[in-house]
Image (cartoon, rainbow, N blue to C red):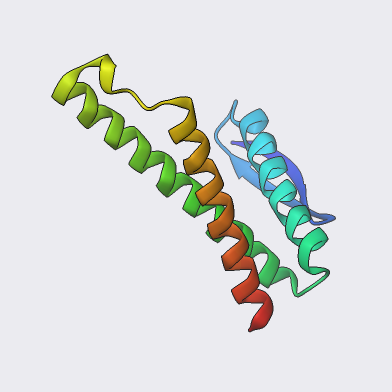
Length: 112
């Protein structure tokens, strides 16, 4: 078993993982830490559990959107080939929609 220590929101967490997965765990923790830092900058210091929940929800939303995009692209590929691929404008629009949803989630958590 591998061991790795990561930092999120200024706190250290010692984790175990499969051997060789340490760099991946560090990279993922850095991503989570960056999300938490975004929310701290936007809404200020709040309870750590709330920050981590917000980061988890936004990351889950990003993953859900990515999975939906992959599924749509698979379906387009099966239905009509490469001529139906998503345009850069539609991808940018999807990214903006995802950012808007993240901000709405942050606002709801801030209000509660």
